[in-house]
Image (cartoon, rainbow, N blue to C red; front, side, top):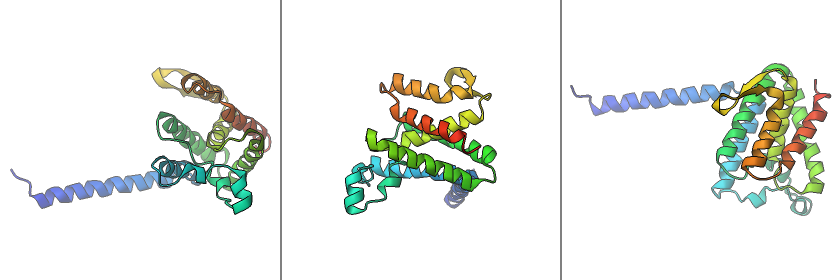
Length: 205
């Protein structure tokens, strides 16, 4: 029995359309703030990694902000994660999972409060960074969201690779440990993000 080329092409087209429809549905179901953070990070990191945008044009540098009014640096530096890879995937998954949980539970019906909390956190990190001089603050804002979620869900249980289970309140510290051990660098920016989140927990109940 032979299948005509036109029939095979039609089935392939239907499968593609169904896949696109499922993808659009999944994206639309992601809460708006989390969707903005995740896909903004994906787009900006992709553009920077493949040379469409030079990271130096979006880095948090004060001279071009004051002298040439390049105010986009104040925002876009939070969305650039240096390069694609396992670290990027892990951070985006954590941001998607725990950011969505915050929006759907703790901040349900309080979208403006969540936007304001993240804005306050970003402004605070930017001011603190006047001393430290990090070019990109993306890791700080991701850890701020994760730490805030862990404080609001301290008794939850999360599962890591190989089935290791632990309480959610330890999640930020475990991620910092991975940075220290695997990436071989001190997680200073992540700790600053956690510190900011700790201050915000008492304000945004």
